[in-house]
Length: 120
Picture 1 (tube, rainbow, N blue to C red):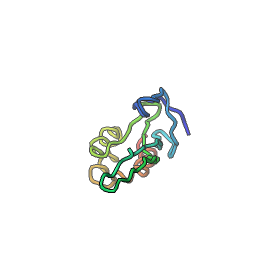
Picture 2 (tube, helix red, strand yellow):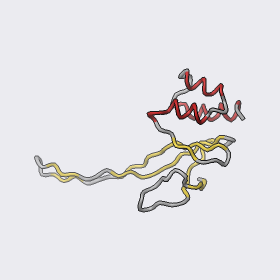
Picture 3 (cartoon, rainbow, N blue to C red):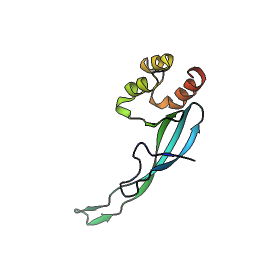
């Protein structure tokens, strides 16, 4: 786990910190981190059965990228191709592979390895 400045505003509003811990998955000029946080569901009440249901917690992981010592980049699913084309603008071959759907959102580890091997 590595500490990085929390430039993304991650964490709850009650426990906001200037630094966050992330698990380093791939090291290089482009780093791939996994950020873990806890999500909680709300409890509920079923009026027809009269049963109260408790809430529960689960762990969520999100990928985060960092070029060199630059700011962190969190991926957004709905604008993935556009975001990756901007982020990898210094590597035209990788942008072309993302735009041609050679690389998709699930191929992020392969994209990071490709960048670190071919685009520095």
